[in-house]
Structures are given as C-alpha cells and as structure tokens.
Length: 172
Length: 301
Image 1 (spheres, chains in turn red, brown):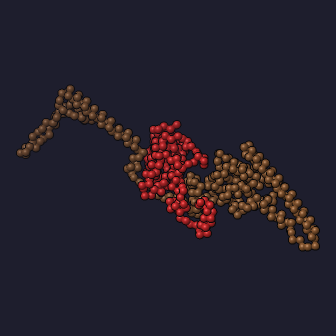
Image 2 (cartoon, rainbow over the protein chains, first blue to last red):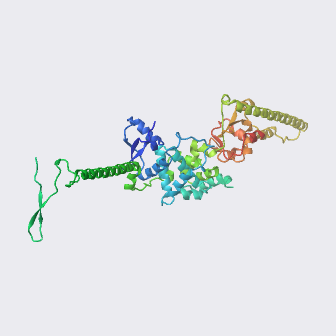
Image 3 (tube, rainbow over the protein chains, first blue to last red):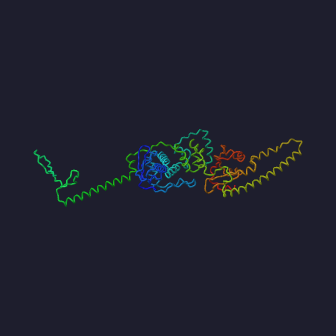
C-alpha cells in the first residue's frame, strides 16, 4: 500500500534533488523498483534518495504530468496492435504537449521526455509522447518526415531508386 | 535580592546630565526570563496585555506553521523554481532506443510506415532487420510453415475446406494429365505414321512447360506441406492454406512488396512460387498491405 504522505527524494543527473509524493512515483516502474530494492522502511519520510538519469528540467515536466495523472489506474493497460490508436490523446495531455510547441526546441523537448519516460518506466507518459510524435509524422511524405525528424538521407542513388521502386505501389 | 532601579542619564540641551528613571521591572523578574512588556500598571491591565500578547504570538505562530505547510506542499516544485534549469538537448530522433522508434512508427498507418522506412539507412535497417518491426510494418498476414498438430479446431475447419478445394484441384489436374496423355498418344501415333519424316515434336518440351504451372514436389509431399497465414488480428486469427494454393493467394493479394523467401524477392519469383519454394523452407514470408483480405475473401479465391 502506498500512503499519499510518503515522500521520496529524487536526485537528477545534474545534481538537483526534489522530493515528491509516493502517490506520483507509483507510476514509475523504475522508482518503485529502486525503492523496493533499497528495502527501507516505507514510513521513513522522506525515503532515501533515488538517483534518476534525467535532468531536472525534464524531470519537472515529468512530475507535472505525473501530478495530473496521479489518480490514474494501475497497472497501465497494455493494448494490442489492433487497439492501439494515436488519436485518443486526452485533452490535458494535448495541451501539455502544445505548451512545448512555443519553445524553440520543441522536438528535442519531446525526445527528452520520451527518453525520460522510457528510463523511468512510466508507460502512460511514454505511450502519450510516442503517439504525439507519431501524429507528427503520420501521413507525411518521405521528405516531410526527414524534415520533421531532422534525418539525413544517406542512401546512395542506386539504393534510393530501389526503395522508390519498392514503395511505388503505396504512393498511389 | 532586589536591584535598585537603573537610572539612565539624559543629556540636556545645556550640556547637563539629568538622571532618568527607568520603568520598574516586575517583582518576578529573572535574568533568564525576559518580560514581554513591562509597564508599571495595574494587574488587570497587565493580564489584558499579556492575553493580547499571547494571542498575537499564537497568531504569528499559526502563520509561521501555515507557511511551513505551504512550503511542504510546494516542495516538489520549489527546487525547480529556485534553480531554473534548461533541458539538456542531447538526444536526436535516431538516437532513441530501437524499441521506442518501433513504438512510434507502430502508431502510424501503413503508408507512413513504408515512408518512414525510406527516410534513412538507419530506419531502413531497423525496419528490415527487426522482427518486431517486420511484424508491425506488415500489419497484415504472416506466412510460414507450421506443424499440423499446432493448428486449432477452427483453423482445421478452414483447413478442411482447403483440403476439399485441394482435392478438386487435384481432380482437375488428373483430368488434364489424362487429356495430355491422350494428346501425346495421338501425336505418337501420328509420328509413327510419318516415321520416314523427321520428328519435330519433342514430347518432353511440352511437359516441361507444364512443370512451371505445377509444382515438381510429389503430391504426397505437397499435401503435408501447408502454409500458415497468420493475420495479427483477433478477428481473423490464423488461416491455413495448402502450398499449392500459395500462388493463387499471391495473385489475389496483388501487392507483393517486401516478400522475401530467404532473401529472394517474391516479386520476381511470384509466377511459379510453388516451384521456387521447392526444397526451401518458407520463412518469415510476409505479405504487405492485406488489410482488406479477410478469411472470407481468401476462401472465395
């Protein structure tokens, strides 16, 4: 059982530390496992520091998302390929991501949060951010995808011709 | 012990000093306990003043503890607000873990997945060589050999239908072979009749042309070898076809992009697929863009 008043201190990769409620960290598989591995008394307030490989600015965004989703049911429901949809992002999450769009490096912010969600094993956040990125590239041409994802075309001319031939049927 | 009242001298404008009487301390004065207020007033007034003093102190204490509680509530964000930091942008898209990349493109539609495959060599390699990617990109039918014992009852029903159709095909084949044999016999008779002339017909050539249409595998072996079409969907489940019907399936599906049998593109080997499959195992044979193919439409073929 997780008591709302229980707290855990997280130490970020750049040396900052923040104390959060266990009600928030219960969504993170990584933190919960770290606490379990420490085998400390759950009543200790705050718990021993858990080091996370995330910078504090990204962790702030993660905590903001966790705070909003603190009452979400656990475990996070696993969806099959058929059930997986990219257009079912909740309104708050959409606004949360839109807020980043005003930033200069919005794409990198998204990558940073995706990486953080992956490292901290927060399935809901990872799912939402992946869907957001998928929506950005869905329905785009190859060139548009390269531009959005900032990928360089490193194919040779022969390889490109072969790929165009392979993809010819799906261009129609 | 009683101390005399302390008299602080006051400097007058004319330069003379005049002693000033300090306010009297209460009788219960102690060096360790400082009185909050010390006035030489009556006990009732003192009590009233002490009451107000204590009340104000309590209010102050309450405000202080409320601030502490407030600070505790906002402790989670306080550290960030006091020390604002910027996100360290050290991750590019192609540096994300492969599982994440596959999760992202798994959310896209099929055409977008194919486009994604063509963005860069890294992404192409990721899609082409990852089983996970392969299955996700396919989103349709996966074909492979399978042990018959592993097929469920529902699939066996489908298999029964396939067997019936297979029998019909075999009957047609036998009847055609009989027809061909009759034709050959007639030709041989004709050739024997014109024995003096040069024989221009080579019976083996006609039979070799048929070998492209019919698999060279023995019938018994073909019966044992089946193709499992596994659609990654709860609705259609697994569909079982015989090897002989594979080429009809392929023609029906039309789109044969990315079909490879041991590296051989199926686009090239589509015409006589059964023959090409002879002796080699069907492995990871994948049909793309078959979302419109249902079990019903496959049975109709």
